[in-house]
Amino acid sequence: MFRKLFNKEEDKTQDELRLEQSLQKTRSSLFGRIGSLFQENEITDELWDELEESLIMADVGVETTTELVAQTRERVEDEGIKSTRDAYTVLKQEMVRLLKAEEPLRIEEQRILTVVLVVGVNGSGKTTTIGKLAHRYKNRGKKVVLAAGDTFRAAAIEQLQVWGERAGVEVIAQAPGSDPAAVLFDAMRASQESRHADILIADTAGRLQNKVNLMQELEKMRRVAGRQVHRAPHEILLVLDASTGQNAILQAKGFKETAGVTGIVLTKLDGTSKGGAVLSIKKQLGVPVRFIGTGEKLEDLAEFDPVAFVEGLLGD
Ligand SMILES: Nc1nc2c(ncn2[C@@H]2O[C@H](COP(=O)(O)OP(=O)(O)OP(=O)(O)O)[C@@H](O)[C@H]2O)c(=O)[nH]1
Ligand SMILES: [Mg+2]
Image 1: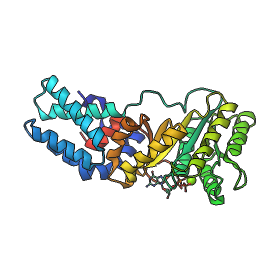
Image 2 (image 1 turned 180 degrees about the vertical axis):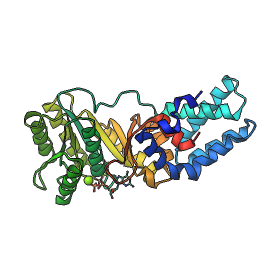
Image 3 (image 1 turned 90 degrees about the vertical axis):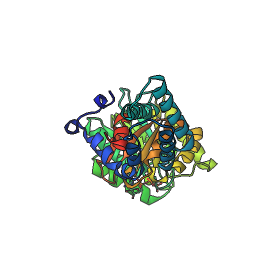
Image 4 (image 1 turned 30 degrees about the horizontal axis):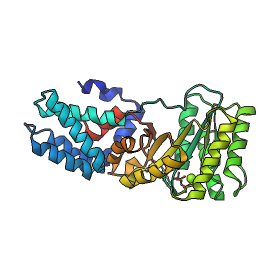
């Protein structure tokens, strides 16, 4: 029943293949153990205990683990499921349910100009992700412009310009030290008036979620954007480094409260065995994961697909 949701190996999209590959470490370290638990013959109390233990060790987080196991177990009992194989299917379905976004991603919707703000702590992968997003949407026929909203360091502006060149899109920048809200304002105006862009993606300086003045700076960027284009910024993507596991969730809570995050980009999934943390993001934050960073190159970004993710984590 669950299998039918998945594509056959040869039908997999590039995104699905990237996701699967980047989950290799997480899969082999701990989630492999979960697969073997469900190869036992009988469904026992020990099975549920060991499942719980394995999920917590895989950085899923205690609260999410408890709920996931309880719900899987309840369904298995209510539905009179007797085989571990079918129970495994229920577990996968419950995982998908934890990950599904209720709202569609707003980036590709038709509007005069879509504005995307990219935020996060230092070094999480914001600028790299912006390059990848530009490449992705340009390939889909969108006119993309980037705004160098990290005015904190000259090198940050140059780094975005390098990504702009790689992706073949224009970068609008001002001198280092300029007000990021002013950079965004100008970039929005240029995107509308002379560039006729579809999507404007703004970089921002890395900041810790508890630095009040820096969070106020983000609020100002949001206000300025909203005055210029109806309901902008349409997406505020928080970039989290997957290798920080449950710690990333703490960061995200701070950002969500003050910066109005609408979606998560989880980077560096390729280098970590802590991919299990993904399962608790939506439950703990109420914000869905939208993209996954699967490497350092322009193409290394996958749109987040819950079914492909669960398949990549647990295998068939
Ligand atoms: N393996 C891997 N590395 C990544 C990924 N995304 C970003 N990186 C690396 O992470 C490092 C930091 O990336 P940046 O894009 O500069 O991060 P940032 O958030 O813009 O950093 P600041 O502007 O300093 O706050 C770089 O070495 C990137 O190559 C990813 O998905 N996988
Ligand atoms: Mg940066």
